Image (cartoon, rainbow, N blue to C red):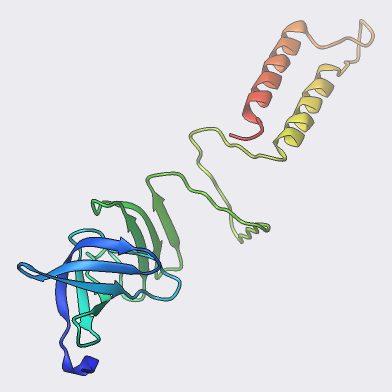
Length: 194
């Protein structure tokens, strides 16, 4: 029986069996469950969650099917745009990547963001780059070098001598105390690692 001789069925996901492939058991009509292997786009691993609506096509005479589509509620993509989103097992959206038609990309996350690479990272911008960080900013590897540079600069400022009587007059002791406070803040701000 070819695909053209069989109309697809819509089913509701009941459970998964995930090993090398994703097999889904879905209820296609009341009291009747059907199993199928999920076919996604190349490079995509995205099993549907329980109660998602799926499309099953029969591929052989023993009732086995393939899942070729999942019904997703619109996330607001306009024609030509693409929005990827990830959900927890309850179906709640936890992260979303929107590639918008005006040339922007928006990434929305409820959790941490990690970027792992075995090579370098290159960022080029023809306009400003900004960050609005409410917590601390950890740099890693070069944090100690930046810290040392700033501490050396504060020490140089402490040793500045002024002109006029008395000769080689030094900075006021309260200013030195303020500079020591800055040094402690620099040490705290540029800690190595998280």
